[in-house]
Length: 205
Image (cartoon, rainbow, N blue to C red; front, side):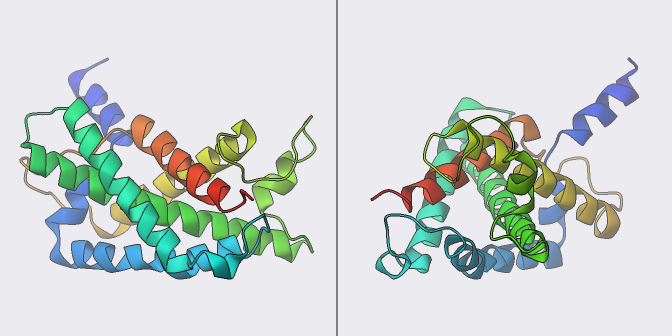
């Protein structure tokens, strides 16, 4: 494999945080986009019922709790994965990455429910496809492989969507010293884990 091919392969698995922070408009939009989590969580948490009444656990609190989890995980990942940047820069990169990936994954999941309702079902599209598998019951639950599998797939869809948007609207020649984004091999499963835990907790009695 040539060096150029290796770089291209690495770029395919890199969250495009450099392209996002390089443009003022992109970063401003991203900071506002995170707050879309509140209406998205309201829609999603009212799609499935559990032991906790939805009004007893405010949606805003759930969204803020998840933001706090993402920032906490960002601090840990910045300690574990060092790429030459300062610790504060690494925390910022991871926080931007996880928050955008999380909200976009929520958007993909919400779209899955909208498509499912188009088929006359109260479930999301991926669940409708996978529910015929053995022991594939209702979801989401905490630390549940079925829940995690579905959320990983939605997180993959979110990562592809983000990279396509950046490619279409933000791919001019950026300076070489821009921060490199985290590897999607870490970002996708971490995002799915955050969603599984937060959504699963709302169903605990």
